[in-house]
Length: 292
Image 1 (cartoon, one colour):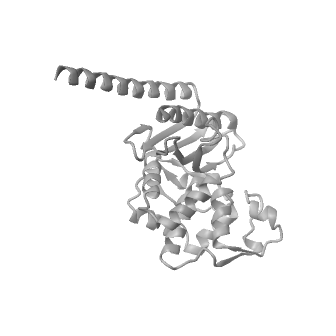
Image 2: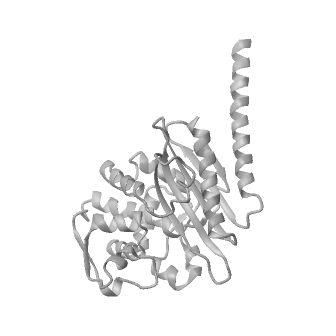
Image 3: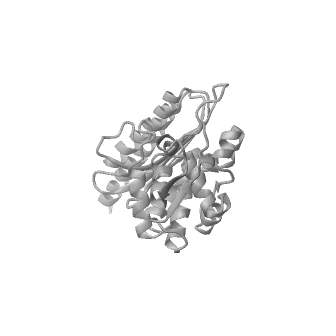
């Protein structure tokens, strides 16, 4: 009994030491940063969780495209939509002065894409015009909110599309989530509890091909690490305020196990480089810890 007690105490002390060290590492990264930062991490196969400001409801920006894509794929699962169906984006729907690789490739508009292509543009390349077309196709933000509510997703709100956020930056605060909600959603998604296995695989592969935010969650990780993620960024306003700089995703460890991580940064007066560096530094802390 004495040996078992000693071993238990040693293990408990080691785990406590790891947790305390991680908290200190995150606090060190955030020291003196003029921003609100929330972090949540959740292990999948192995029980592990970490939260700092995990209940804070912060602006999502383009991270909400994950929620939109999941809703679209739910409707595919239900037979209401099909990945190979054709969708036409008219010239009037190609809003200028917004991030849109679709518009750059097809500047004249009136382009026909499959729903699968539209999802890939919207998630992997974070296309704003593609995003708003998807919302129009499914009946607006209310459809996304209703679906997320039905899946028990807490501390999440979606009210406005990309065009509305471009028209008035105050609208960027209307779409929010907590990081705790984000990682729980990602875990449920990975376990095929949100959409079908086939749709989960499609969206996972799309997120693995994400081309935005390479300097965020993936920034300091080994190049061969698989990170299925969705980024979001408001850019700076005329007064130097960044409403949001975000990234959330699923990381596959070398041993094949997984964890979800979400870092949301809000109301920052730091540079874009510093904001993205915060996300990359925090991501590296947890990758190093959970790789052991």
